[in-house]
Image 1 (cartoon, helix red, strand yellow):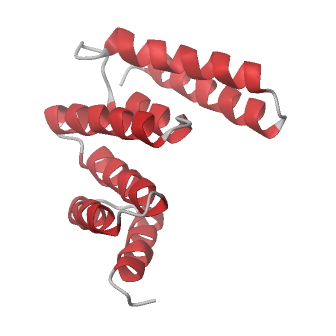
Image 2: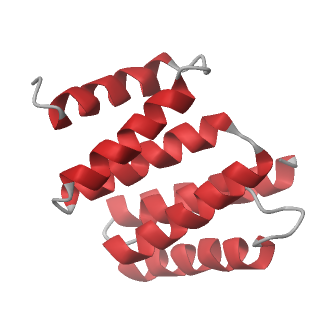
Length: 140
């Protein structure tokens, strides 16, 4: 990913966090719209990257919006062959599905995340996956 795009996404995510933490819904909505516009602008193009879609999903207010963003992120990660995002986005979907009460869908996605995570050197993500997998399989 080219550095300026990464910087743009990071800046928008920080703006979203600060606006949410400081109770500024107008600023939060503005940053969200900017992130969504960035995603839509690059969708399917040379600058399309799963990071932008994962960030959009993470900051989406509604479940359906988040799932749509994550689905776009998975498609992009599959097209680019980036296991890191295939693992992290599947994990994000699993968490969202848990929150929505769909444990069967959550289990399928966390299992996918675990498969992709096996090839990575990300102990923090691996630990979170194992925890959620255990919870969904009734081991906790």
